[in-house]
Length: 117
Length: 310
Image (cartoon, rainbow over the protein chains, first blue to last red):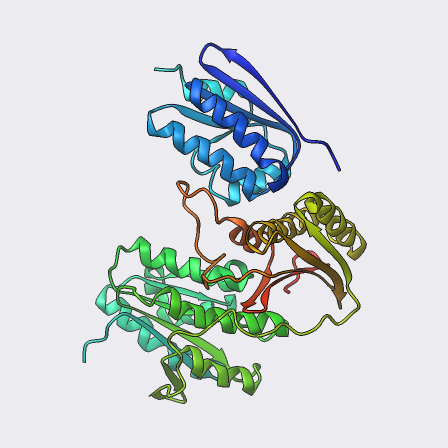
């Protein structure tokens, strides 16, 4: 089984990028929840990079939505980008693509989210 | 007499003439009253009604039940959306989910979802759904069961209230038939979810599923396994086997599902959890859920032939 890894970087002031590698399931969703909670506490824009995420389940969707809903409450934004085939399928079936949360690249996501107000 | 709430009617028909004689009164009443009408039936039946209507067919929303209703669990969201789209105004529908070409397991689930419609729309605004059953091809036992899930039955021009109607059935009760072949069995906990996916992927490859169907099947099975870990006592048992051309995966645990509509309600974006069985139903054409005091079993079916009906 592929190991799961999270790496973080600041794309620009106020904007956190969280990259996920491996299979995001219930066993590791808590790790992403922590990384997202830390980012939500400090940043106005949070991006979740999924290009090296091979698998996502509904518990992964749940932690992403929890962070998204918390940020939306005070006008901040979260987006995910570059999903692989399986990940895109799950995102679309759970309504995330229809709600404008999913982008092809970090650049597109940043352009769409706009600057922190 | 003014009718209240959800009216769930069955029509037992044989041949095109009886089909039209049974369905057209509802179609015409809806058009005369200006009520929205959706006809979700097989393509051939839809064409019959459309031909009878002529230009008025444009006022009817036709959907091909063999496309949208591939998974019987899609029936409730389909009608939920249609009713909600019209904001509580009276609507009418024709719903024919059970063509005889489907497997025994699929017909069983069609019946259970007919019962679940009564649960789903128990508190609904007034609307009427007519469900035609083809007596020419379905067996008698199945037609008998239509009397349990529908409040009235029409046959050969006579409409009667169903004395056996069950407005609030336990649609998760009962057992699944034992596997037709000796299953490959694997017990798992939180740390074995990856191994569950690995085993299901291996079985899907062995059964000859196309790559996308295999990936969907793995995702659906993984959802069932994480449900066992989260809600079923922290662990579960996976069984994998083939029946004819179908690959089956079943996950069993000690939990109890108390929401019969689980997996049949479209989750909204503000809701964080509760997507597992919904997702399994989107990824798989047949998901059988049984739950009671002895635990929960969820069985997935995938046809090895791409596009084939389960």
